Image: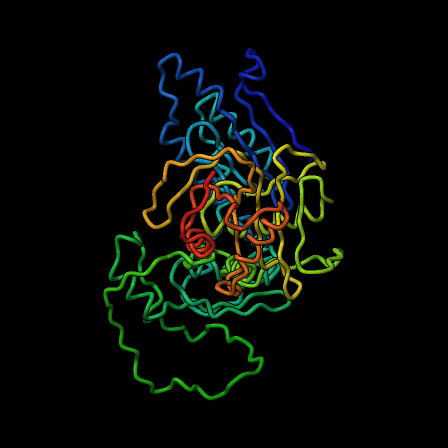
Length: 433
């Protein structure tokens, strides 16, 4: 499927028209209604550019049903879209692209939301039926269409959102499920009903009927080691914990069972794996904007670690196009250990600096126009911190430029870890640019 654009205002110039853009991804297509210029035009005329609430609610319903369908097909990633009146983005299956385009056109031009409702009805999955109490076998081709393992993973995610334990098993052509609610999830939802509106416990106390299907035994423990056990007692204590991990990601449960967090955290802790096709003698590489693309990509990959950890908006290394020469001598220092990039420093040369007193956290008023190397960002992998590697990277920068380590300048703002390193290198103060 090629990318295409459909203009909705034939009498207007294409650049000023509302338009629908269709973009293909690996697992789905993204249908986006671009209202940006339309909103600007209506705002200048004093009209209200916000979408009607019924419009937004209907789009949200379609989007929820559509993303469920894509996850149901086997996709395990996330989706992103912007909120507001300027863009409406709906990820859809490839088979639903034309219906989505037409439904958005009718909603936008004719204020007719019936096709969006019909699309949502068609995409809705019988999740409540699949997760209803009781043991059952869901047969592929009868109860569901996706591969059994993909379907089981989808059901596990939905059951987790509902606070259920699925007790599921996939076979060659079916999925066995027995949804139950755990005592802790039941307690949480009963203690905080405002957080789970509409939740009703249908699973506690459910008794299987005599004609309920019997799940085939495939091996395992024959003894019930919980028979006659005393129920666990639950209580609640007042504690304040952050939902953020030191690596920059969230500690809360995620749709992919935390796989993305685990992957990022491993890279943050151990470093970035060095590609096998890179010949890397020694342990320090200096990458420049005109270096081979494989090295520049590795620097950009390392740059994503501090970007996530420190909540930066942009990657500190973005030279990913054709090789180029830059006037400020930008370069990235990559430190390697155990075939991983464990240290990353980005620097440029600048000639405007002022003196900063680290003890009083204030400027001393002294200005300097000497050309100096300036540290834009420095990062060390989590498991290698407090071993003096940051000092070695700054020394490598000073040696590369041909100056003393105290003559190196720092970009502002400086993080807490950066101030600690700078104070260790120059207790009397530093140059900042």
